[in-house]
Length: 422
Image 1 (cartoon, rainbow, N blue to C red):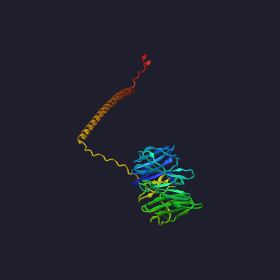
Image 2 (cartoon, rainbow, N blue to C red; image 1 turned 120 degrees about the vertical axis):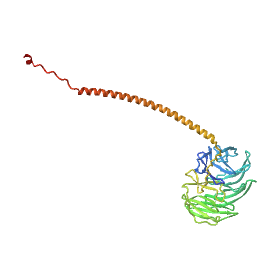
Image 3 (cartoon, one colour; image 1 turned 180 degrees about the vertical axis):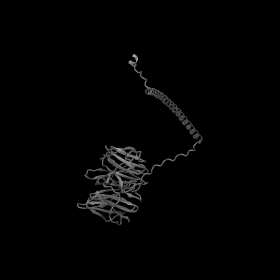
Image 4 (cartoon, rainbow, N blue to C red; image 1 turned 135 degrees about the horizontal axis):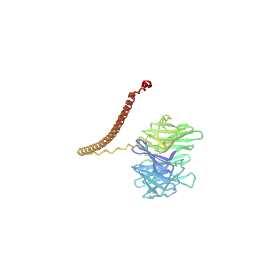
């Protein structure tokens, strides 16, 4: 069944937006030219269930605070959000599902309230106009489905269709006109011997296509039917297994495409003649999340894609699967204004810059020359001092050598005493 905490929006240009509830806040992400954007927090301290819709160029988000107070957020660019409280005439349980439908002068809101009977709720329609709630009308009493109590879809500007359980194993439809308020009769669509575990419905201009899963005690069946005018086709069993889940029906380029999972593995079955016959059920071989969920998909009502639900990756931020989103365009760089340059001023400025640079270099060179001259003078003085010291040492060395090389003086002979006596 649909997860009421995750919703997807496809704009008229094919751009995808993701809205989801997580840890008390509602976030929004968009698919841009360089991937999914960083989550943007729209509201905080809110209850998990919320309603999303787009009317003309404005997106509306209806949510409830922890105390049950309803608030309406609106934005035309998905970045700046305006919040305003809406006085509520009943107690919000925190899991109340709202279906919001804006019009030119009012907000049409469908919601459900508990009754005195267990597991029986009342489906209610009301309007919010000029800051005031209109008189509520009871549409029907019904048995809420799991996760998502009822399903609803806008078929045209003033035409909607509701799907809800009128019996334990009976799913019915009721059409409504908003202006003037007109309620159609209830039409049973699906009647099963065992409770159905999941259902997916998509409308085109002629038929209502229904894919649902019936879970018995020992087996699970994937079944398809369609409603054309007042006739409902015979149930067609497409698959039988022990564990089937997450069924999804959608239309793409004139084909009816049905998908479901068997033990977590995706299966697909295609009809090219409006559901009259189907090809064999086969394994879906494209990229598919290991743990998927389904969220409500809004804005996908054209020939390229007609769907009321979308698969999401429960393990990677609820990013959509199967439906390849178109990225937002890359922001365009604003064109530079063509300015005719003033060459004379530019030349003068260039000359001044060169002159200043030459002056700075000349001053620097003079400073360096003085420094070099001072250093040379110091080196010259030291060299002269060393030369003088070396000359003195050489002279002293020569003197020492001269003394060493001089001949020794002659010694006097002793007087012969005997000669003296003669």
